[in-house]
Amino acid sequence: MRNREMRPQHATTAAPSFNEAVRVWFKIGCLGFGGPAGQIALMHRIVIDEKNWVDEARFLHALNYCMLLPGPEAQQLATYIGWLLHGVRGGLAAGILFVLPGALVMLGLSALYAFARGVPLVDGALFGIKAAVLVIVVEALVRIGRRALKTRILVAVATAAFVCIFLFDLPFPLIVAFAALTGFLAAHIAPHLVGISAVAKQQSPAVGDRRWRPALRAAAIGLSAWWTPVVIAFLLLGADHVLVTVGLFFSRLAVVTFGGAYAVLAYLAQETVATYHWLAPGEMIDGLGLAETTPGPLILVTQFVGFLAAFRDSAPLGPLTGGVLGASMTAWVTFVPSMMWIFVGARFVEDLRSNPRLAGALAAITAAVVGVILNLSLWFAFHVLFGSVQEIRTGPLRWFAVDVANINLLSVSLTAIAAFLTFALHIGLVWTVAIMAALGILVTFALG
Image 1 (cartoon, rainbow, N blue to C red):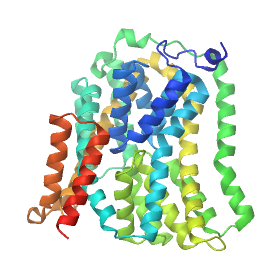
Image 2 (cartoon, rainbow, N blue to C red; image 1 turned 90 degrees about the vertical axis):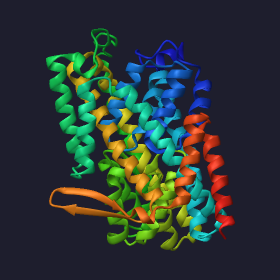
Image 3 (cartoon, rainbow, N blue to C red; image 1 turned 180 degrees about the vertical axis):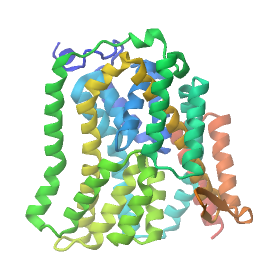
Image 4 (cartoon, rainbow, N blue to C red; image 1 turned 90 degrees about the horizontal axis):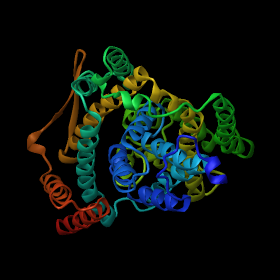
């Protein structure tokens, strides 16, 4: 009875036991390759298609809300669904287990990078995994797009979002605002234009006026937890120590990371390379490549930055101790705020499911994100398949130029194999990644 009381009133009747949910969230955390698109598709496949824990409408509604927040939307979606199933403890378990496997892998890769850069075995595995990740992202894009783009209006919103970000390099918040306004107005005219049915509008009851007290309590606890390690580092090591600087910088980043890791990548690279001098330009690209090959949110690239920053300027701590603490500080101030937004706002956003105009705005935002993910998929394909990619600007237009003669035929071949494994043989994510890593190692050693 106590567990039932801890769960939100609107939790699904198909909810599993807490122990079963913990096992599944850990499994998702270990299999979450392919960036946010792949992770969201994986959650959809397991939570809806296999387990039937929540329905399609609630899943997409939760996704819409998470897309509005700063931080990694896939991890926030896991936290939200965990909260729906088992209340706060369910949200904590889902959010932590979604990140923990990837964070541990990224920590290990960061240490390996710092101590043993250029190991052929590691380079070969990364070479093969990049091809696998590219195919996984494309497969996830197709899956999410097929479910989110239900009407012509939503397809038009996704297309416009892609054009705006790919050709005009418009900021993601502006694209989100345009999409929200379009969905709001369309739902006002005719809800079916954005895929909203009369049944869906009445599906979820309001949670009542008592939602304010737990929301304020969640905000107070979240803010305290967020800043505690930064304050401890300040008191023990001083205001100028790299751990304090890392904590403050990535806390600021946690508030402005709308649109996921790629949306903030340019700002992250500029600040860490040009302002703080923590990394060289090539090292930032290496970190992104490592993050692409780990399970968990792509924003784990920040953990790589935090590790190297503290590894190289750790006094009075040792380099390895400093690196581990720097990576831990970065992960903490990145993911604690992202979970806090869910515990503070989820009770309110569930009420929006009964408001067709706001639901229309959120549905259009999801459609816009499909266009943004398409842009990111192309960006990643350019960098995987071609030796060099040049960004060209002419007036308001921006595009990427590649030299066809400089195409990496090995990458193309490995990508084709990964596509065959995924689309023709329907091999699972883990086996696809493992096979491609092995092929990458074989190719690297064969070519000497």
